[in-house]
Length: 228
Image (cartoon, rainbow, N blue to C red):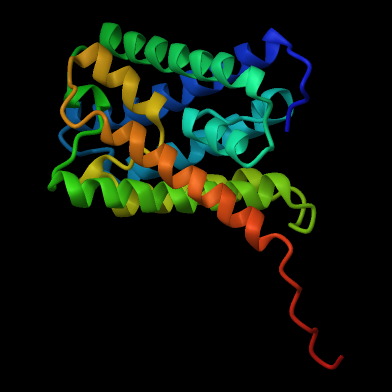
């Protein structure tokens, strides 16, 4: 977790991490469409999982590797991130996502809906699915990033696995965004705004709820050990 002292280099690190998240994740969706399914649904989910692991390892010690406006807001809402840094982080994440989507459009054209997150089900169920997946992601992040009792060295894998299983479950239903910046870049460059509000409101609501829930659970008494 970052300190209260502002350092623009943290914001740059957030932008770079989010750039590669969108470049690899949305890029895999576009490559799958361009190759008529060669990458596959599983391949897209793995691309998101792998890039999350890589970027947490690369920038986690520099910026915290939020890579997601909803994560930043969740940390802030739980009192674990300074208010003065929220807007710079959000702006950096969105710039990184837009830059990645721009590069994808210029190199691959408008294919596969630019990897945009668009619901294939009714808005109500889509909102619920995005909220639940976002809750799961932030719940895991709170555990591995803020609780010293969690085994060290697990953060990148735990978060990457969570993104992966959510993508496997939800990508064909909602796009499995869980990340407003990830949705913003492709939507802006592809002009695909259908139900875009879902990909802001549901992740933020789900992650704020998860952060507050974990803070409430944090003080739970550990279970007795066998034989004691």
